[in-house]
Amino acid sequence: MGAAVAGVAGKAFYDTVRQDDEDLVPLGDSAAGLPPRQHAWNASLAVDEAGNTIAPRFHRLLMLDVRSSGDDSVRRLESALRTLERTLDWGPAGLLFVLGWSAGYFERWAQMESPVPRPRPLSSFEAPELDDYDACLHLASNDEARLEEVEAALVRGGRFDGSDGPDLRAVFTLRETRTGFIGNGLPGDRMNVAGIPAAAPMGMGFKSGFKKNQASEDDVTIADGPLKGGTTMHVSQIRTRLESWYRLLDEQQRVARMFAPQLSPHQVRSLGDEAPTFAEAQDATAESYGVVGHLQTTAQARRDGRPVILRRDFDTIDGGSTGVHFVSLQRSVDDFIATTEAMNAAHLSYINPSVKGTENNGINEFLFFQRRANYAVPSRSQRSFPLLQGRGAALT
Image (cartoon, rainbow, N blue to C red; front, side):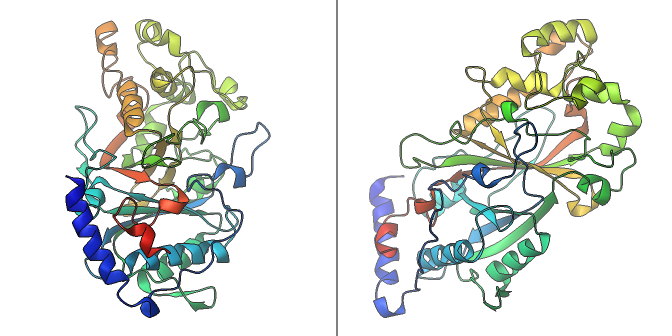
């Protein structure tokens, strides 16, 4: 849509916002020392002995729609986020979060062409629901109770840090909350599935997030344009067949599916900051072994030998089933799509017919994509109603 349309809508919105300065919601001070990127979490994270970052143990995704009322929405939102940042340390001991905005938000509220595409199915063997929420707030902490308190304050008007909380009910309607966990022992404790190793960090039994098998935060940061300093976020809700994963496959077969059949369980247990991909041998592996690994296929999408997505996924038992909320950051949603298409490895059935979309093809057989969504994640200074005409005036 044209800039003129956005300008008219934006002017009407902000003329109302600023009709009486005495009634404006106080913004409050920004917390000192925060990174300009919303998605800059890694510097606050602990690392293991190999230098791999250790993800926060508990996560929530708040799926939100903008309300049609509330003249001071921009200030109220920014004030609430600043309150969280002043009250809680930026890090897993306190709170980490990013706020992303969907194509629907940009089209309905900013009245402009969206900088991120609407989601779509990414294979012939999936039929996910396609989310159309306006925004997604990803919260993360090592303290599960803290996430509950933050959610209650933001969307239910609950108390926060002993006082009235940063209430966003005039700004957003909560449509859905998705919860989950990641970290040694949590899947075994929380997922009622036989076979999960007691100390496993994720439900499929293997460590995720090797330092050299992840894109860096610099890699996924947008370099120029209206979202400069931000990133994009894809969110998938996936149901996992963990019972079959452990019942039908032995440990060597699980290693072959997750990594590559050239690796042994002992080698996987000894990995440091990088898991070998055997990416260059993918086609030969399919021909010789009749099976390829997930890491082998996804590594085909690397750029200059480096991954193009930064995964921040976590396990879940939402809805009473085992699953994964797959959250990935990338410079462009096209990078996520390219990685997914590589994971699907559709051409391998022509090399060896035993390797099909969901047979002997990485972990595809054990994943069912239920929902997909794409979001733009602006820089911290642009996070409250990004690209809406006149937003800057409302925040002064």
